Image (tube, rainbow, N blue to C red; front, side):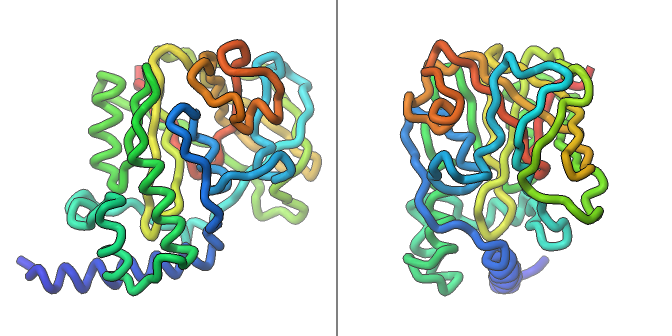
Length: 280
């Protein structure tokens, strides 16, 4: 069995490697809004509070936009799988402190200053993960596949699960741009499931997913998209039908109009996000 000191050296090296990866991906250091009454999934897209002009916010749409032939500008970020942090094994993840109270010692362990971009990103992720859920919502953060599976199974009440992800095709073709106009090539296909859990990537030295679900309040769709530059995307989208607990200043309302409770909000999932549904 490896000694505690050897494990410490292993994790130190592992975290430093991932910090270098995250740094190269330009983790945004701007603090994000963390209102307890706000639906916070928007933080996944930019890791920060942003204004309406940020192209990364071109992911929201209305329920009445779900028809074949709909045209809209959509932002789909891409990640290089060779440099994307992976989930740790449960034993590794459980051995590393993951709480705001332990952040100073973790930063010291990693030789990071509190005002560095990496430290600020870690702080915001921890705050996001420690928020209390809104009524009717379940949320958790997972840094290992085992914990993600166990907690998702507990929420959905079923052992057999299926994953849905957004798939970007012909990505290597010339002309791909993150933001372009897409056309709904077919009638969106609704995924009829009683419940779902969506997991979004967060800014951290190793892979951390923020997962949440609300029983009976969401609808999911598979949407075939054709881009103006010739790109094809099989996209997963979620429509939040009950927004009564959302902050009225939520960026989705600033983009789409409407207000909490009377305006459902739909959004596309980035390619590195995961939706868990029961496997039937």
